[in-house]
Amino acid sequence: MNKMLKGSIAGAAGVALLLGGAGTFALWNDDAAIAGAIITAGTLTVKASESTWRDGAGTEITEPEKYLIVPGDTLTSATTLTVNAQGDNLQATLNIPQGSIAAHATTDKEDVALYEALEVMTTVTTVEDGGTVAIEAEVDGSYKVNVSAGESQEYLVTVAVDFPSGAEGDDNAAQAGRVDLSAFDVTLTQTPAPAPVAE
Image 1 (cartoon, one colour):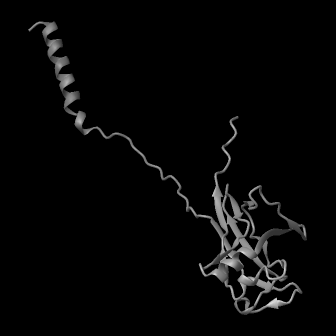
Image 2 (cartoon, helix red, strand yellow):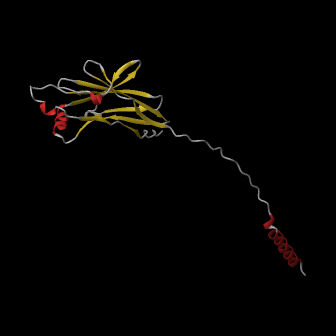
Image 3 (tube, rainbow, N blue to C red):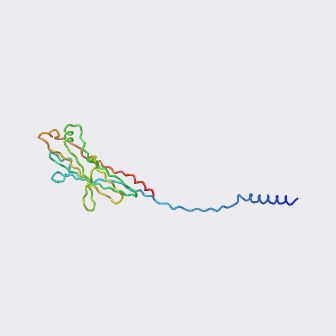
């Protein structure tokens, strides 16, 4: 057998040995744990206090449903709204429509007459730096307050219900009328956070 043939056989045998052991190689490996985190949601709530009603002289009306309003009277209702906004990048808007304590009447003619005679006006104030600050109404008469995350914020909503006195006999049709002023319409809505500024 010549040298070239012997070399070829030896080389082939070496390759076969290497390939035959390929399935037994132990490949190095390792793993690492990625630290997780506990995610906690924030809060966005608004709560209304019990409304305090007073007559034109400032006397508290403990049972408004039993108070008999007459032309010339103005009744006021004061309610405190407490907003709790907690959250990173949280922004919200508190919307208080004009006449947030809305008047509702049945179709009875005396109820409708009283409903049409009453004038309901809403104002909103807040406390800043130890003083009371009036919030300016929007064009449509509603109040939109931008709320930012932080401590609880309070807003005082005052509703004046005026029964103006007209000419003699003008409001006779409203006698014994009944109007429901219990609907309190306030919404607190999260608003999108501003988009990040490109560097």
